[in-house]
Amino acid sequence: VRMANSLRGEVLNLYKNLLYLGREYPKGADYFRSRLKAAFLKNKDVKDPEQIKQLIARGEFVIKELEALYFLRKYRALKQRYYSDDNQ
Image 1 (spheres, rainbow, N blue to C red):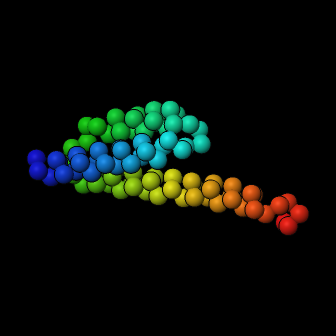
Image 2: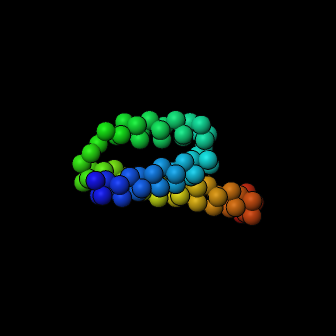
Image 3: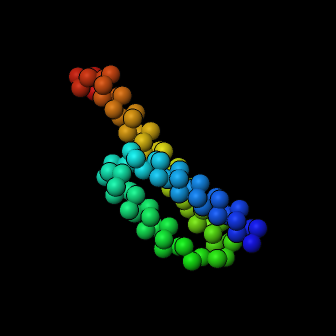
């Protein structure tokens, strides 16, 4: 039970972090939130700690992908702002 509780905390933190990152999602926060909720509900009955750890790792990978997406989007916006078309 102790193991499950610590994993539960990790899962909740993962959900909160993803929910926070989802606010900037290109297709909209509501779209992201509904997909996120569905993904977590789909796995709500998983009891095996190893499987839960794998799912957490997948969620952390998604966080890294989202951060990269947002960084690139910000970089492109800055590049467009500071470099006019005649420089290309």
